[in-house]
Image 1 (cartoon, one colour):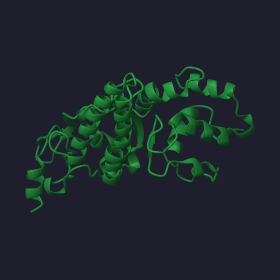
Image 2 (cartoon, one colour):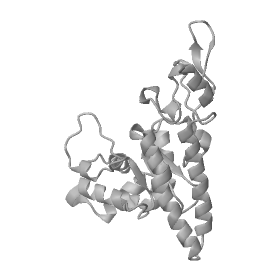
Image 3 (cartoon, helix red, strand yellow):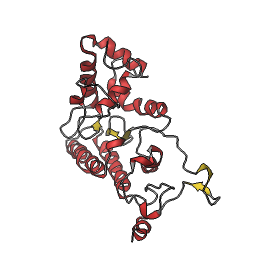
Image 4 (cartoon, helix red, strand yellow):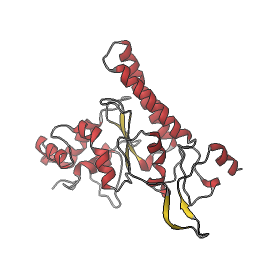
Length: 257
């Protein structure tokens, strides 16, 4: 029997590739193929292989002697993709399906520059620290931009579009890193002095709260249907539980004294 369940096997394999581990997970040997920083680029960037090839390696190890091109194609079709097109599924189908499966609380996020064949990366939300988002923004995406500049100079068709789209994505990620309103994180149950300054998420606040800057910046591959107006019920003083608030960095820093 394969070590991954047949149902949702492709999605589970992506999670394992990003380093996700289930409680009491058995030692199946797949951890050696997990990405160290929880950032997997769909194109080959900064010395790392493309996501499709890495996912095939993980699936092949998981299925062992049962692995074949027919098995690969069956998994892709079951996951809403096309037979033989792992990269297309990762680029265009995975995140939409993943977000729906987890009721718009995805734990793998896909950021992209809006270009077919452009920059796109899968991120492990649980390990997305400020340092790792900086690595994505400046080191990994920076390497992609350098390649596009070289291609522009060499007259490669489409490189100019990819360069502009990548630069725009980098600027948006910088906004998330800085966390100035409205690209800030706000958790209504916390005092202003305890609100994150810049990209410094508290995982206990949940995906719904922490994904908001990425939604506001418009860098996710597909729409995440989350409402931030107000929660059901009332506060102890009878007021509404309002979530749609933004505070500037200056206000937060002043509250911290």
